[in-house]
Length: 108
Image 1 (cartoon, rainbow, N blue to C red):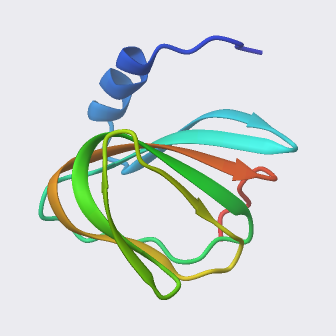
Image 2: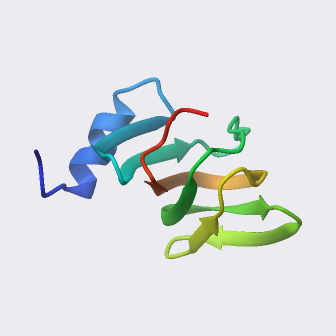
């Protein structure tokens, strides 16, 4: 099991992928991945069965969590409880986000 990760390396791996989300850590109680949304794109996600935390590594956008709407940028930390509707929008600069799921994401 890997214990150390380099963000630049993760971003380079993700850039070579066609996927928006790339998981890099999974244990039963937690999964972590890098989620990248290009500027001007539409966030295709739907609510998850797990609680999650987003950490904005870079970029600028707005995010809706339930009925709240806020701007997000590098350094923002966002908590979304399980099954709550949420979405990034008005993505003006490519967003790179670390996403933490607890327990590990089940895929829906």
